[in-house]
Length: 300
Image: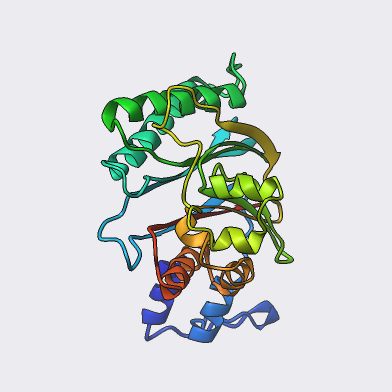
């Protein structure tokens, strides 16, 4: 459409045509063009649109985070469904090969899920023998084995969302987070941190204010690559509609308030700009850690 409008602007000798209803072919003005392009899009069928942002932060010399975002449409010619896979993994700082652990976990999980989903993608009438929760659980466990082999002694968080239609299946280990962000500004944490401080807070031994400043707030009791037995949190929830799904590492949520997160998203013209704004806000707050964020919205 932009190319079409550009051609209109470049036609210097265009003459107006007047017919029934005084229709004119005079090129649109720049103001009129922007008014058309700024209208809220309507998609048929439903589509998932995602933005991503990442930074090493201001106090780290390299980035140990890995993120992944994929969205496509699947189904028959009559009816299609949005399918999306979104992942954030935070390689554990202070451990050897943290970046290897996070990238290995993400690549392994993506490969497992796409292999399992491939027959369905090729033939939507195919009936999968496994539930999406079983597929996610097996993928996380496969990622656990891959991390222990590729980067022994290291570790990584892993928060993944597999979206099919209006439902999303979450797989989660560690303290990266998934949020449902509502249009009214409410942010609902979908995941539970597997951290020592969060556990103490749940037991009522410390307050949320004390947890935020606790010297052991980054200590995890559950992460990929740490221990032979892994118990990931696997669950299914409705996609926040209307609203957003946000996955992020603690480099974002630990330094930018929920109020500021929603304000940045609300004031941004698109998801990519919102993610860039969120990363910038984390860096402005000191950027003490690597920062990763994936923001997803479903348009209908």
